[in-house]
Image 1 (tube, one colour):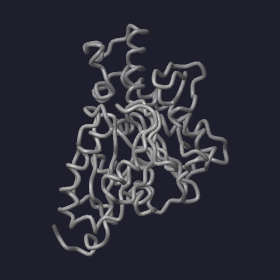
Image 2 (tube, rainbow, N blue to C red):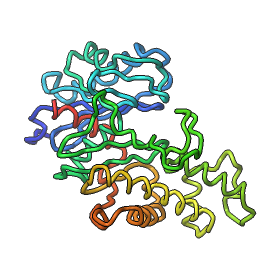
Image 3 (cartoon, rainbow, N blue to C red):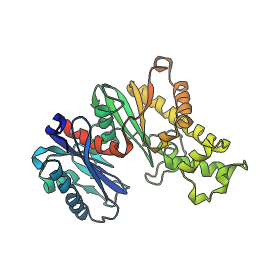
Length: 324
């Protein structure tokens, strides 16, 4: 390992807990991920065995980075993570149920200060410190993956709300009495339409409700996903292109609502669906502008995250440490 000025400074640990896997790494102040690794989340039925596995895999990285004395603290991003209490509360995608004192469990194990927030808020902080939002004081981060997450930054501060759960824009109602969301029991949420899962549902609906020719008809229904829809759209498939047009329309309408709420400088999009490029960005921008009142039109940029997707979650969680 080099002994550059940046590595001689204190370091931060970033941990991103996902439903399937947990990524973690050691990061310097410039946003260089010096060491990183990953463990399974879903194989751990008990939180205690998860913490033990994390300890076993993270301690060797700490030693490689120069020991515990170099580490300023640990930042954790997790679904339904509460910044104020350090707890993960009723996360539907994690194997552990109820309210978990996750920050305390990690702190007790590693004897380091720990700060926790939800995964989308961590992504917003990472973007502000290291990515496309560097220097911005007002922006909204939208993560387009299996679900739709969001983090809202206003006046240079992440908005947590009175209870730590502000910024659940993916669960706002965009189509009254629309699609049922099995995770929340609500109807018509943005997440039901503008996530990778939503794209798959739109594809299955269009295929069932029309007789139009499509490459997608050659794929077994259970194998259709957003990647297959993208590949068909790139190949010129009109039905697949319509799926992205519809998805972009819904997302654009929602973004217009969000803009009129906090007047951000930019909306930053992150996650798997952004790989569709103009297929989703063009209709999103078009319908966003059409649904804005005049005072907000042509003012807000739509940007795609600059962060390397494999490192972004670790960077976002580590950014929490520098705010301690």
